[in-house]
Amino acid sequence: MIHFSQSLTRLIGELKKLPGVGERTALRLAFHILKSPRLGKDLAESLLEVHAGVRFCSVCFGITEEDPCCICSGERDETVICVVEEPQDLLAVERSGAFSGRYHVLHGALSPLSGVMPADLKIAELLRRLEGSSIREIVLATNFSVEGEATALYLGGLIKPLGIKVTRLARGMPIGGDLEYVDSATVQKALEGRNEL
Amino acid sequence: MKLDTIQIRSFRNIREAELSFSDRFNIIVGKNAQGKTNLLESIFLLGTMKSFRMGRNGDLITYGSTSSLIKGRGFRGSVSREIALSIMESGKKAFIDGKPVVRPSDFFGNLNMVVFSPEDIAMVRGLPEVRRRYLDRAVFSGDTGYLSIHHEYCRTLKNRNALLKLGERDGLDAWTERLADTGARLMVKRESFTDEICGLLGEFYRRIAGAGEEALIRYRSRADTPDRSVAALARSLRDTLEKRIPEELRRGTTLTGPHRDDLECLLNNRPLSHHASQGEQRSFVLALKMAEIEYLKRRWGNPPLLLLDDMTSELDRDRNGNFMRFLREKDMQVFITTTGLDNIHLSGIRNYSTFPVHDGRVFTEVAHV
Ligand SMILES: [Zn+2]
Image 1 (cartoon, chains in turn cyan, brown):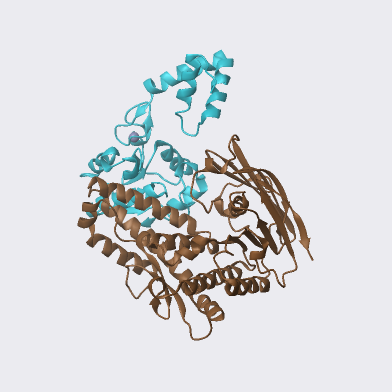
Image 2 (spheres, chains in turn blue, orange; image 1 turned 30 degrees about the vertical axis):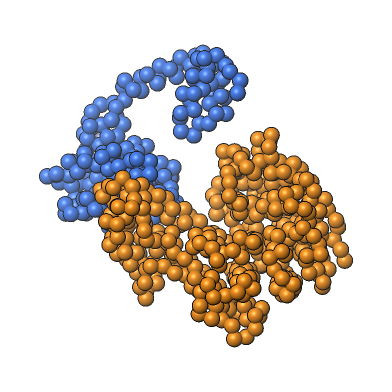
């Protein structure tokens, strides 16, 4: 490989860490940024801002600027919680408009293979939310991947003994599909047809 | 669909080749290590996206190139179709009629094929994993949905094994249940394939070896419940798994499941591996291949392409002739590699093309009449 200046090499290296970005894309992005100083400055500022201004809600662990987030503090059905893997999954369910309860973001799925164990997810936090609450139903909306399915089963095993109804999104979704990429109508149907676990 | 033409660039030792095939017999002839099997492998890749040899993508690309391209053309009904596969170190990309294939299921089922290689002969004597590999490939060629279940099972198994290796019980029940569930779906598909092909095997074996001989295959698993439904098998598998958890934690691996199952080959009710002569074993595998071809023909409406890798050295004169007669009766497109034309029983076969291969270059000798 040709050696660029050190700062350019660093930029390429950092870009390559982003999901879906390989050597060639990183190179293209880096040169694009290099050629437009304005974009570089705006991008750098927004990157710093996002970490200073945005954080995770202390109740549901979704993305928010104020804590608790507008969903946790707003007028919603308090008896149902929809559990998702990632903050972007919360947005996918929200976009469908078919759910009026509250959320809980796990920040991942169980994957012993990649070293993700129950303690690495916001599971203990979810169980604490259930203690002495008025919650009647938990909707498990983890992905339909191997890991997402195992996580749903695991949570079902923990929550059902508490006397709370546990449901799982209907399998109207593409197999192995990430909730994030599924269109709103499909999410809506999956929510309507959810089954008791 | 049959393969009318192929275009190859930078694939193993073949830098460039453009060939038109006969719709019946194509004989690829050359000394060893000239590139015969590479040509056969490129055809296999067009049908399955996988190689029948072990190795990484990088091994497929000609030394000094960054990518390989394999492009095949044929007709599906009256519509022409082009299937292309581009291989890079980082992965493979498939195109149908110039459009990138997004879902694997759109790719599979276009070019159906069966390979017959010396490894298949070794199968009856080999380790169970060789027979499982055969079974997985065979089930998949008739049921493309098998791939995603197989993939799901392997991934679940790896996760469960990772947990067992850590000696961790928290979460194990969930992975056990998932494994039993996917495992049961996998077993049902394997069993229904085995059942269906078993009758055909017996028929073809009698045709080769004479009446009164009984050849059969049986899927062997530890889930011994009379009810072979997915639900019943999952229950049985889960029970067995749960019983062995202490032992599994000690050994750090999953001890029961379809990844441990076997395909039992029996001749007159005795295991083929111990009680049959080498000749009987060969006839058995030959009959099994014929059964597989017949099964796929019924499944897809037309016969698969047959890829014969260096088989003539494995079969004696009688079995060879027998097999060629079978192929002649079916309207099949066949690709054969051999070190010499004399090894093949071409008597009665009028429509064939020969492709001499020398040092990665492929030549064409036009069909004989
Ligand atoms: Zn919140």
